[in-house]
Image 1 (cartoon, rainbow over the protein chains, first blue to last red):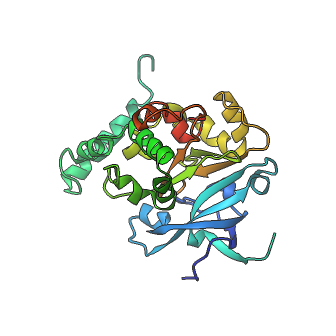
Image 2: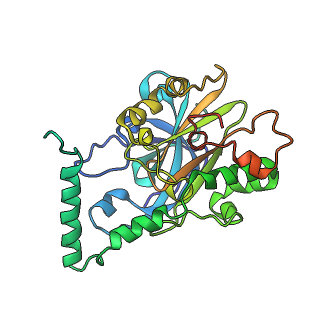
Length: 94
Length: 196
């Protein structure tokens, strides 16, 4: 499993559109956000939905700017996402 | 279909699946009802209101609540245990600069053990789809008009945590005790679609 993220890390969510159950909301796919905090470790929802045990992995609160998700809006949306949904982008200033 | 409740077909399927699970020994007879009773037992917005009133009157408790809500609410003999396992609780505090509002866009996740059953609008497609895109518009429909410079953060309960909003203490309430303060707090305030 890849290295875990820390608050402030920038991440991009995956763009996959799986056939089965996922807890990565469609509106948050392929978007750049920032790790707010770690929210425990849990088996991936996809695995549990298929009756698989699944290894616990970190889950994070990830903060997105509405403009980056929807093309408009000045608010923020914080989504809770499993590590497998996230790719690192580094911590460079935006 | 006249007189036929739209959820009847689903209820029939649920009963069928339940009886299959019971017949194959996956669950004990009546287990689903017992689990639901356990989940709802003691769940009422009064719990959330007590937490808020304590946080308004005890700054150290407020700090503990925002850092580790599951531990903090045990001081009030409350827990997120209601169901099969304890769920993580995240409390987010409204300030003069930032207002929080909670949704579950994927289904209807909600801190039931603390707040009781969720309001029907919380589970509606309209609320779930719109509040992430236009929270200011949704809040206005709830009668909440925030100043333009107040930032809004929407929390989507998309995974394992449940969220509760800590509203701002209303002005002019200095003379009230904890129980009187708790009486000011509403369920919608705890979701973030009201100011208190």
